[in-house]
Image 1 (cartoon, helix red, strand yellow):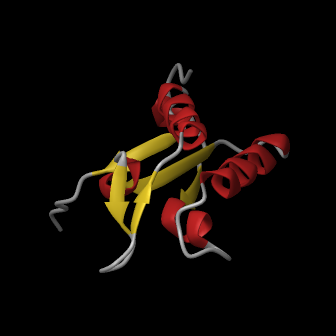
Image 2 (cartoon, rainbow, N blue to C red; image 1 turned 90 degrees about the vertical axis):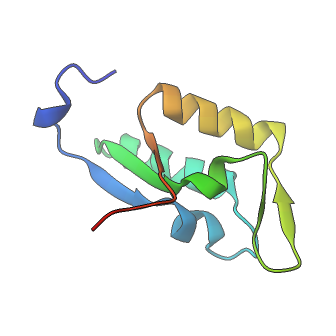
Length: 94
């Protein structure tokens, strides 16, 4: 748990790019591996994921829908609780 989040160096992780790497679907096991590797070398990862990818099911293409497994949900819930995963809003103002 962060005591003072303003004074912490973070390593930003582009969640979709990491989770899609080498697959045609979002692979939360790959994301978990990257987070664990960063933590092992003393980094504080912050995974940024669009809100769409932390829903029970979502379109990954026009014809394919991915349904998240219980294992995927465990990773998501754990990282949200640990403040490691940030769910980005679907509407971003610039």
